[in-house]
Amino acid sequence: MSRGKSTYNQPLDDNLKLNRKLRDKESVLNDFLSSIPDTIYNIDIHGNIESTNRSFNGIPENSITGKNFLELIPPEEHDRIKRIHEKVFKNGKPWVYEYKGFNDGQYFSASIGAIKKGQKINHADRGGFHSQAL
Image 1 (cartoon, rainbow, N blue to C red):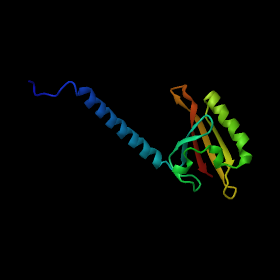
Image 2: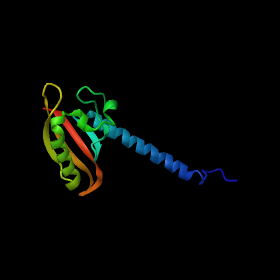
Image 3: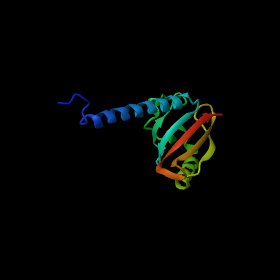
Image 4: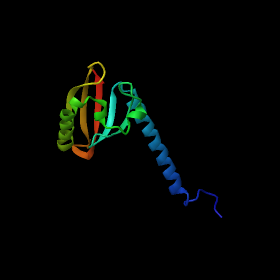
């Protein structure tokens, strides 16, 4: 009977190491995103917020996830901003714009870009949305 490491456990050990590396990289990415002073959203093609790096305009981070981004802006801005987002998801070119917020007419600068892998849109149904107060 051999007293070495069993080859039967090797795939499990490799998988555990890979999972640990993945968690470490995810932790670094989350720390990086949290350190950015602007609000960043990951949205789907319908404008639903899948994740964000921080609270926005007094709305806690966990309350933003799941909302449609249009809920965060006044109705009079909806049509114009929806058209911008549709163009970005269609052609993959980023767009920068300003919009009026709810609070005291404060304006925000926003940029949106489709998630790409190289030059190709990787997820035609997802994009990144960035917003900051002016």
